[in-house]
Image (cartoon, rainbow, N blue to C red):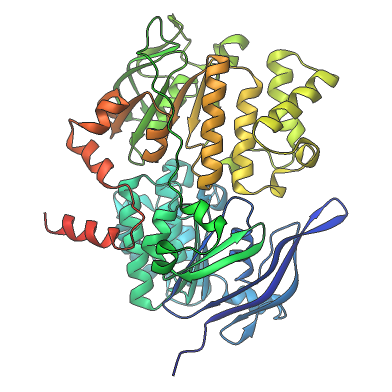
Length: 537
């Protein structure tokens, strides 16, 4: 006899509020999930994936409401159950791994305290046992120094490390159902393999059901038993993973499956004075050196991709360039002129010329400001635009990032999807009309269709505005699409650098080879083969 589903969602309808009006977000979706089964939920940004995942916990974020349908979890109707009963399930029997760990952790408490809170409060285990369990799961999540890292605060670890700590925390009570909302978005490809393997092992070992939300089709191919495709709140199709990969029925699904086609035309070698030169920079926090003698150049109309594992120093290098972290040794030059090491003593023009798009859009946008203010402030501050000229500039920037100006200009960040928030970050950087833009994982939160549009947009803007890009990313497909040169970093050291074509064709360093071999493929057996091959080495 076939086991009854653990979770059944029937004709679910969710609405979001815009002003006084409610508009549909999820439009009659059905879902069924058994213990030990993983359902992959895919679709472009704004499809309703995260909203549906939260609804599986009987939860709707602020500004949203569950307007119809039923949510049945192990015989409990989460739509009609008392709030106290729903809360007793969350964390203990139903867990959630958010897309943005930086926005989800309490910055005032250490990681270990936040890990232990749930199992202790729910009576699953005492504090001492919870700490020992945390160390074990931190180890399985491949976190460095697992017995000590939990005693750090969230701001003292990298974004990728924080995402892994959140994944471990969700598993603390060994829940019956886990909703993974882009859990590997912030991870480099080598770490991603370890985390995917650990998640899969935990799910199999404990018979946990999981909803795996992602825009990375190669990842969902490794993780899911079945795949459901969403588009603008509607179901498109659903099938077992192998059938879906081999023969998707609907045209929209086929468009998702198509390999990203954009590859920027090769440009001639760089000449002249670089826009930015990083020369022999050593920098760090406290007594620890994070960067060690780092050097590279970025020229006009060139894109330098900086790649490496989480914690390798990529974002720290960006902080040095922008003046947020003065180096202990070395210097940064802008158009041949040495920049003051601290942003506080840089001129307004020096500040304008270098803008940054941040990795975590959730934490980079002030939640109390509307989009016209978020985008308008740098245009007003650096360019002196006011009134109609400022309004026109804001609308032009919204159109550039493919958001309808009349629809979005007065929205708050909470009214946007993760991908839409990231696009606002891009518009805000463009508003200052800089020469250099530092892109810190700017496509990590975007589905593949939107990624391609953003990359094409950045490429066009680079050519039109003579921009230089420093592109921090762990997505090597993005590197292949847009980079001219690649800088590979490991533990704060540049281990290899050179033109993209040469580095991908014949990498000289073993670490670079490891990165290239760790890029997931659209094959459900790829992860198994890779793990087996590495185990046999």
